[in-house]
Amino acid sequence: PAGDAVRGAQLYKARCGSCHSLDANRVGPAHRGVVGRKAGSMAGYSYSPAMRASRVVWSPQAIDRYLQNPQQMVPGTKMGFRLADPGQRADVIAYLQQQGRT
Ligand code: HEM
Image (tube, rainbow, N blue to C red; front, side, top):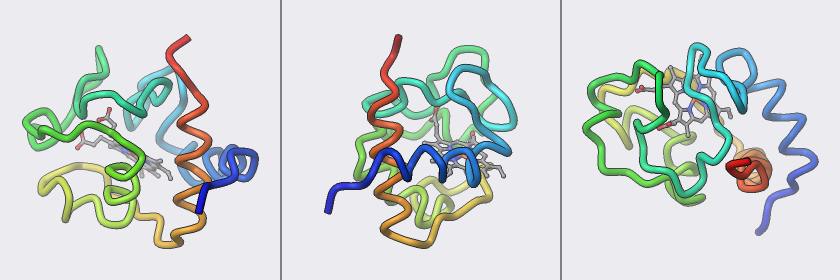
């Protein structure tokens, strides 16, 4: 089922916002344009070697898998956060999908 981007915006703020923002690298990399982007490619962000070496492209499906269990998808990643609820993942991904490059 398609996620709800409005709910996703709130979830993003509450659950991702401690480490991420759309336009600035913080604890984690900036997210604007992340859907469709190659993993480990945000300029100026210091990724783990595992993320830099990964060949993942962040499709909605790939982000869904990563949020379920980051270590399983990208062993050695330094993101230590999971979003267990499938509906919440769909909402956050719908929100990210709307935050394009400009
Ligand atoms: C990386 C999503 C929450 C810390 C990433 C990446 C995605 C992502 C897609 C890879 C980006 C890229 O390759 O450019 C999310 C979402 C979150 C969330 C959607 C909330 C639902 C968090 C939280 C933290 C965190 C709460 C800190 C406690 C990191 C770090 C990385 C990262 C450190 C870099 C990983 C590495 O280099 O191995 N996140 N994240 N994230 N995230 Fe998150």
